[in-house]
Length: 157
Image (cartoon, rainbow, N blue to C red; front, side, top):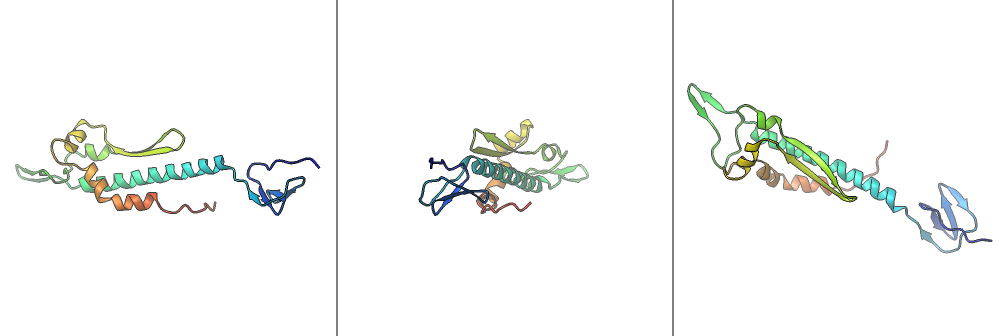
């Protein structure tokens, strides 16, 4: 009988090849498991992309909560944020323009970002010492680690 190669994703048990519950005759003996890695890696990358996007959205919500405290106006006096505090919300432009993205780089790299296109967001992060993105990330580091390293469970759709 001619030798039959194991198909991708098939399982060899007790000298018999099975794929999708079917026996494939003519296979050589021995116990081996053949795993089709490409679909598995594709599914894993999709799951991690979704996790990264959800985590970025979670962080955006935390940042919005931290910078959502309004400026206090009493008569002509205005109470704004001080150095070391989160910036207070005056017009709401910074709050509205926060973006949460997940970007694929190559086959197996995903990067999550929370950012704002406004120029003064960079100024607040740097020289003014009113960091809101980095501080929020540092405060939420344990939650981010927990979300990204949770066990992957089988989807039951």
